[in-house]
Image (tube, rainbow, N blue to C red; front, side, top):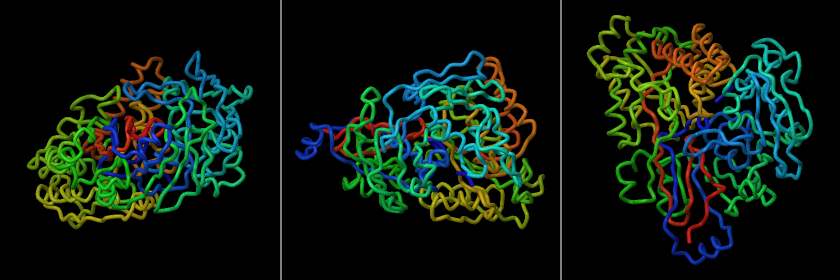
Length: 544
């Protein structure tokens, strides 16, 4: 099984961007802010799996892990460039053999020191197919990965990656199968977080109350479908910036309208997922406390090509569907401009994006769409189904797409809501659902490659996020060539050629790219999110 953001599959229709607010009028809040503490509550959806970094590939679980863990690198909030965090240095003479040295001062929340072995053990676990971790594809570039993940109906020959070697407590080396110039950029993704010894002693307990190395630690266990509480970890290195808040409660909602009403009542202080019903009025109500900026997400209509080839197997049918969707109407009317029509599989924030790359496939042309659809023979029974997660505010735009397809292609479209995001991911991953589906991807790390391999490669079918079961050998070959390119510029051109194959075959249809849209109360300041939509909770303070 596998599962945005930050990575990962995005649960909701809208995402957050938060910034400084006006001072609170509460004297209680002022006292707490002055002493560098206080607590807040923020909105969250129920995570799909247990809170293990190597097995979290969706936005809700990643949001919590971002507070609990610190990785080797982090990404600059303005440029998306990788910056060293737990790593003192990450160097390679040839982009194949990498030496990683760690800083002093980081410990896990149980007091255990973070060492090179902490990373090596975590990566070995994530790379082992017996553990069915969603982050497994991210270790595929490391030498020996095929021995740990030999494929379906085969058993791993070892439990250790040949390419990982501990030199000393603060140093380890990583040898890749082939050169990969963007390896350092990958290392901010949560699959590369370290794990303490306690994880390997009792994984089930860890999933409910993970022991991280970040600025916050768990405050009790995960209370499913209710809340996850974290508190400041006072032994976090001062040089990395200790959390300013005393604690944060991730309050779990299954309806965005409920969360928004709680925000308006100041029962929570921030929401990163606004209901579509609020889009027309939120700026007027929250003023400067409503922020709008680009984010790394791409929203799709996906197709289960492998499980329902009769309906979705023909690329011409998929192209007709794409041309029958009015992206402008959806982004302007339903999302009130908080979305931008997609014209590439790559998000515009990412180097390698090409404006208008999809050409006619992204242009609204009902007459031509109908002609292509009919020439390709239509779909069995002239019926289609579109599935979506009901906990993410997607009902309106999915209904709009259904109505457009009915009108422009003459096909009967039914809508299937899934109660939670995890439910539709499970149904797709287990091949129990064969309709078209709503999906969205937010970058794991800022690279064009991250919009290609994790979603559309063969390895991502069983251990990744290729829910459509798409396979194209030329696409695979181009990815491999791009990985081994001698320069980033050469690699980017090859990744763009792989992107061109997706544009021709449309295994998914990019519909829109995300704009962060956030609202927050007067009680907080210094709130922001990165391009992956992750909140900077360690920098947040009560206003005063």
